[in-house]
Image (tube, rainbow, N blue to C red; front, side, top):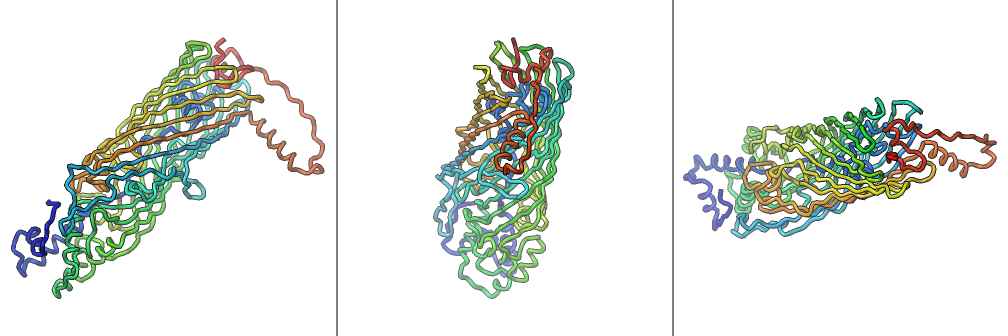
Length: 617
């Protein structure tokens, strides 16, 4: 279909649209058929969700500093996620870990006009310029979901909490932890990126993660963890639909402005389409807030240390299927409302709309309840650790994720959605109640390496690198949780203090300097084929993305009695002297060092040794 119109009069438009002669007998039917063909051909812009970049980013400082190369060298209490068998390396008694991981996310989107793409023209034949072309957008902040209060916060941070227990001399170790294995989100505001995601949050929180490990012998341990999780998705997005059919509605609307005809006033009133919608006009906004408070999962791990200088680890993490429920709002622009009102403005128009199941009652907003189906894939990691020297440890990991199991996302609404009523005439088969979004992810294989050097007995230095490949294929790329291959750099240290207190510090940096999606590449973003997808807000534009994610992490691990002593000391400071009574002097016995006959127990903290460092002497 031609995108260039030079209508000097309305008769010329009619002749270009209707090749046959328009007599009184067939004129009404042909115009009516064309009008409804235009209506049902409006391409829609609806939210996509999911991708692979968000897994295992902000969980533990040691894992961050080693760029996730910890399967054969599990990181303390967060072994519950990375390899539950690593709980056997914790000390006898009760230990607690506390900390936080703040995250800074900087995403820059650049849009440039494709010189080979033919532009849209208005009724007068003038080129319509895309206001998004030649612009650059940067998110204003990160974004995270806050459980319990059911709200979002314009920042990104992950908590660290866990406790472990092992009776002295026992082969069983028990643990409990809360952490965020999947997280991502940002706030873009009213810049050009709002058509790809104005504000976005998608995360999975393990709020209760009990675990157990069993030391079979001096060399071998097994572990298992069960996760009670919450999946939450919160999206706000503006919508526009640049394509030929939408442009025609605006041309015909402008061409018939001010025209009046008694016959048409009773059948198909002017202006056509209520004035029409321009190709770069905002259609409206969609806001979705859904969650699943019970998304269970489990992890299985094994740790084998055949020699003091060699360790192997493997972990399997199950898939997570989430059934989300919540609220949605679909807000429509004035131009959209005028077009819908026009389709029901006469009895004939209403009848035709009912026959074709088209919306004909204008509304500024549709709201109600929605459900969504999301899936996090099963994953597996394999790791090895080698100690070529007494103070030097080298780690390497291979990570696999079955993202190909995620074929589509499914969002179901409690009423017919006007946008979906039109979409089904473009070949969409999900119906007027369901928004089914094709994803077709691909499996990912990532590798990582890490190094740890015990500079002093109280100080360990760490560094790591991971090559993280994205799961989104280029032809399905969009601006919601899609990320290409990124480089993950980590660095940090472990510090041993008095009273068996260990401090882990880390910095992480995930970076992709340039990823490009040329015009016509992605059916979820800038396809030039009419009807190829539901999501093409950037048609005619080349896209380039730059991503920087910066993490800081702090974790303190200590015997539980250290925390209780601190609490008692704090209470003594705020409690009046007359209430305190007389304290009995408590005599404590010094704990005997761990059994040095076990290679795994050698990993436990002993005098003069770092908490997670083997005694290779």
